Length: 272
Image (cartoon, rainbow, N blue to C red; front, side, top):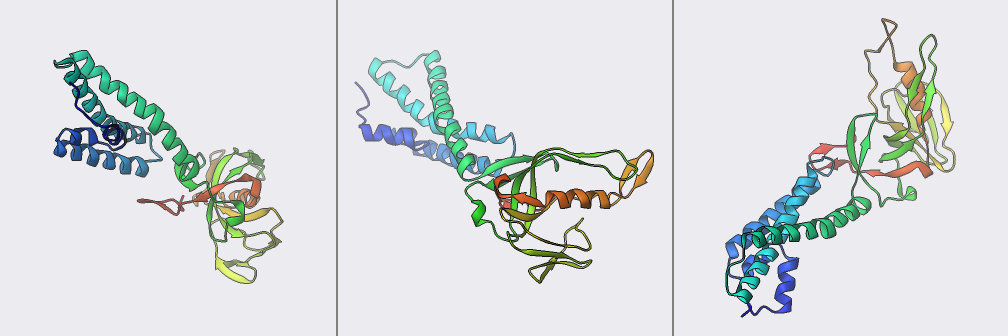
């Protein structure tokens, strides 16, 4: 004879991690698996930028499928009148885990990354950041840190080999919106007549007006103050980086990827 469980009880066992144990009176074990699921869920989100995230997502699937597999085994044993065999005790939990992982958690986290928090590898800085993909270009404000796609280009410094800047995603802070007037001074940057702090590598002089469909964005890439080695001689890299950064600063709205979260839990994402 079966366990006499209602369809709603089976639904709860499938929907709530650890509920299958609680259905048969094993409340402590059910709470342990529920707590394990929450810990794995928190770790998965915090470690969104790291490969180890997959292990914790697998832990979520394990905690979720374990209670249902336990309940299914007890139902099967009650129907057959004898304990389940070793193969059943191994294969059934594995099948449940595979179903939860492939049909629930992988699609669910794919949607989470597409709609809530998208990890993005910034190759120029050798790090990964998380940005908000729901932000539209029209919502971007001055001071926002954004991720955008940069076309590749090269610069030929005087008496030096070409510097090649590969295409790909980079980060930058928005200083000017379309129509803003930008003026550079040795001490600050003036945006529509208002002084804002300079960032490393900015020009010391000059003015410009941000064109329609663009922002003035300064890349958050650290300039090596010690210079670079060229032909066995150390040369100052500031001028070359300033030219490259100034070229990168005209960012088209069509190249916008998303607004970077200022902090992702314990990490300040605005600093290179």
